[in-house]
Image (cartoon, rainbow, N blue to C red; front, side, top):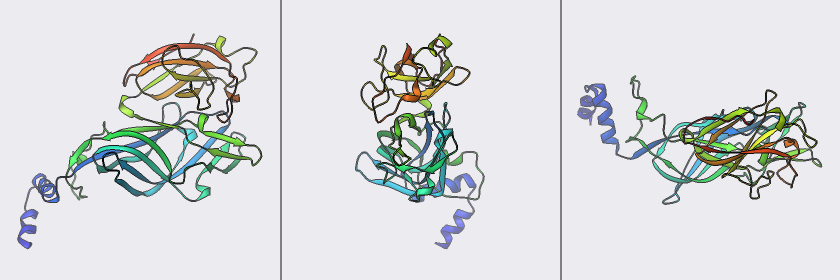
Length: 308
């Protein structure tokens, strides 16, 4: 064994790394990055969740790959809007392959999850059906980015562990407009997450302006939004979990601009709502849709769509 160590020590660095890989096995490894984004809401200025770990279920044998985060991550969902996101997992190394479920574990401490209204009132957030964490049931692939075991070495290389920074990157969209309800009797907000997960590099962003004529009318309020429905010429409806339910939504700002982020390729119907503040996900609401527009989103290509 001493001879082996001395021989290894005399090897040039690239050959040394190769030897480590050969003697450590040939497991296929992948690198996974997962970010969190959100659709903006009317009444909330901050909504913080604290993530503590992860669990991934393999599709072929139901084995679970799980661990705690080195440092807990507190993320303000209300700030991750208009095509921005915060990373929960950043180049996590794990066995490559197909997975069917991702759970982002949450802190057990109630005060680690809070909601603050635009009036400045902060309270603890009630997490509904989230005992195991934020769970996304979706089949996704973690492709091979390196082979063999990973070693931490005090050598500088230009190859950063053979990680492909463009692959195995996913974004989870928590639609707060469809996930957050307020109980006036208890003065509590409850989060029942409505989520979707997309491959980040294959998603697109839709943005543009909305003409003033679509934001005024007898039924309109000061809350204007754009709802996105699957398919051309889709029927429109409020956010209630019933078909047709929007894939996502976003508020229109004071400059009449809107942004929808992380949209997968496909055919869609854009719909403008001029009284979005009355839309509550736990009940049926009569929204004022002022116009609709068909569009087709191509993979990985951002679109500017002005609604005139």
